[in-house]
Length: 172
Image (cartoon, rainbow, N blue to C red; front, side, top):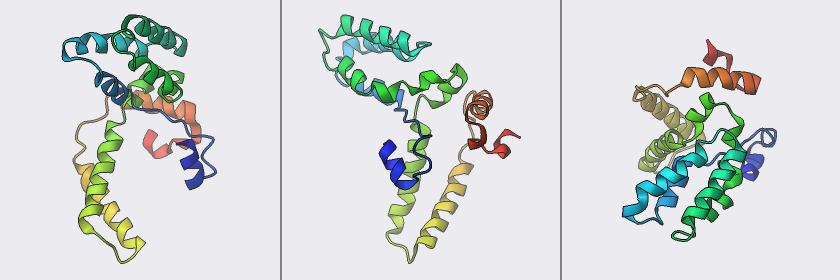
């Protein structure tokens, strides 16, 4: 993923942090679990991503592996394979973690934009496509009636950690 950003915007690739969606990782893990044991396995996964440090999370993953690898040998290796991209959010305070642990909002937006582009088929030029996307974003934004939980606290933390990368207008 970092390489993709480097191709699109070479000046930004060093600043990019790739964070996989924790919710999707848990769902993927539960695909291997029988219905009877889903709640128990999900409950044992929770201490991993709710840990306060990356070291604690690693310890919780090890404990999960000891308990569940006999019945479900694919889950902990899957977490370990993705570990590099599942753990960046441990570098952030709890205010930010609550906002970035899932990518559902981003995926929903992408789906809506793809739907708009797909129904049009083709465009006379790139400007026409950009105008349509702009109008679609205006329309989609009207549906965003529920604020992101803890957004103000997270935004303040983003401003401190990321400095100039957070637009000043957002902070006003």
